[in-house]
Amino acid sequence: MSTGTEQAEQGGTVCAVRDLIKTYPATRGRRGVARTPAVRASDGITLDIRRGEIFGLLGPNGAGKSTLVRQLTGLLRPDSGSVHVLGHDVVRHPERAARLLGYLGQESTALDEMTVALAVETTGRLRGLGPYEARAERDAVLAELALDGLADRPLKKLSGGQRRLACFAAVLTGDRPLLVLDEPTTGMDPVARRAVWAAVDRRRAERGATVLLVTHNVLEAETVLDRVAVIDRGKVIACDTPGGLKERVSDEVRLDLVWRDRPPLDVPEVAALESAAHVAGRRWTLRLPADRARAAVADVTSGAAFAALDDFTLATPSLEDVYLALGGRAEGLVKA
Image (cartoon, rainbow, N blue to C red; front, side, top):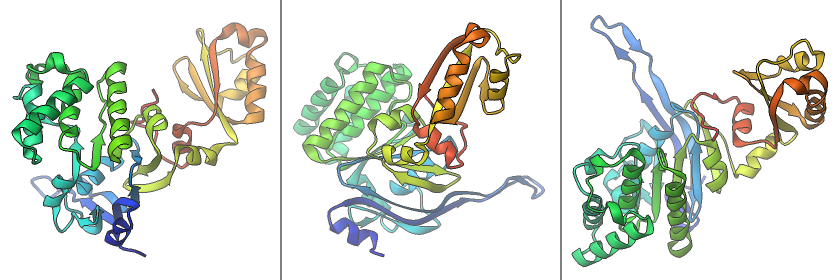
């Protein structure tokens, strides 16, 4: 197998991860009794991120996504394994990561006391821009993300979504070839989310930037990712394009039924569906072979069943369906 450095030098790989392992030890109380067991947060992870793509890490909260990212960015040392970013070994030389990538973590409290404009300009200066260049890039990024009107506001006085967008603006300064974005659009309204992805697309097209996106938002993952690694319990359980992953369950479709009050279980066809349904209040979600799904739709859209039905949808497989078919946990996945 080629080393991460050799692959990066071939020009196709920006980040190469090999056999990464990280275990958080058990915590113990005063008498030595374990409070929490040891957790293998990264369990032999191997993957490549290619130049110019948006590569996603998808999984529920606690799957190991953020731990993996902290190792990729040089903030956390793995127990074993290797990470190469553009040919640089960031396990042996973690300080090099800051010169190679822009990182938006889940928390960015270091900028809270600054105004939006100062936070962006200061980040540019720290990344080697001169005073004139930093101010020019500050103005361009704030205009691009429609943050001009908030330029003089301290980050700590912004709403959650505005603050997140301001932190994203800081990440964009300094022209880093790899952007690592951990849940970047959390708390943002639809307009801000569109601005984020337009800015990402612009840097990919104009500068060849590569993006690593960490998310548990299935809808976002399906719409923006070129490839995705599905992670659960510290392991990569699948890695492919969204379309390639969905082909694994292409013989199934998802049927969502919403009842007006309660399901008419006295109707035999409805009662037969109950055992296959995931029930959440008035909503039933079923994953069925296509022919059975068509028959189920016919059953619930006639007679007494239809009178009790408020709404229904029939959809092709989603990444959530793939994730569940692979044995992943649904807890923490965001569907919309």
